Image 1: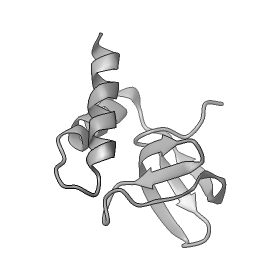
Image 2: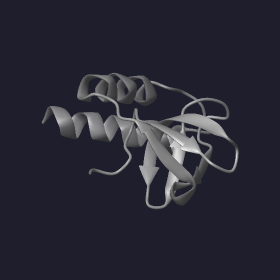
Image 3: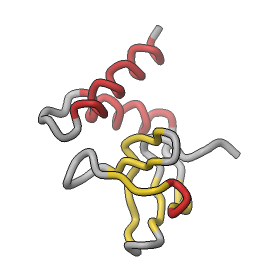
Image 4: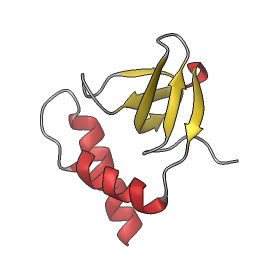
Length: 87
């Protein structure tokens, strides 16, 4: 089974929340929502549902077009990933 990726939904055990995944970077899972750019430990997350490739691409485009300092590194990463997908 492939790892957790953008657009997947995970259950974060410490908070009891379900997150929409913006990005996974090493052992960090960045969530979509407020505050944008927030993250938790991958080890604390359990996969609840996988995104389709179309859903993943749409979310990457939305993240890439986001503005603001907090999630700037995630937006830049998403733009680069979209460009790699389309090359």
